[in-house]
Image (cartoon, rainbow, N blue to C red; front, side, top):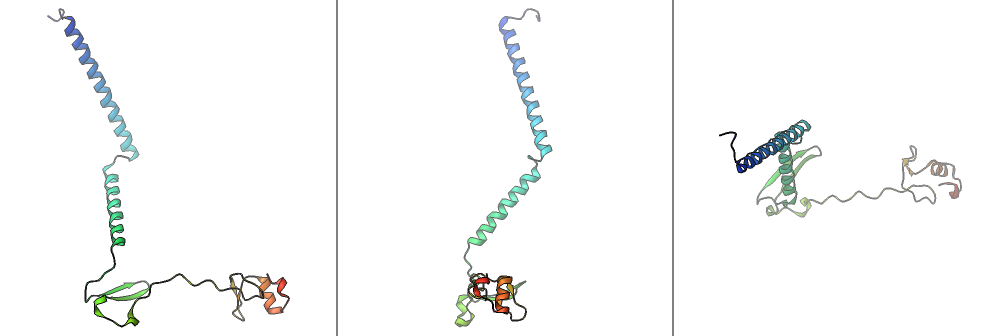
Length: 152
């Protein structure tokens, strides 16, 4: 029986063997890729979990920033931080305007040099007169009363 197979059966056997070979090669290739990814740390479950946590943390931070700062009625909030203790009251309490918080503005512009005809921002302060100065030339101009052209 084994020696007397028809041509159709021989073709079917050859095709099945070819499919098995392709399938085994594909499985070997996938196993190799998985091993490489695992070695490089690209496919680890720990890394996926970490990325998920970071994404969730970023989303929560965005939500926190986007929500308006409103306190419930009759609420007092004490916040103790490195800059001191801050007490915040809700708008419903009706405190006088003296207690309203003023938003922080940009720092004032830097003080200008006290040298004659000098418009530079100061870098140094004279230890005796406490005047703001930008250079040694301005220092000498103030202390020796030399001409303003040589100051800066």
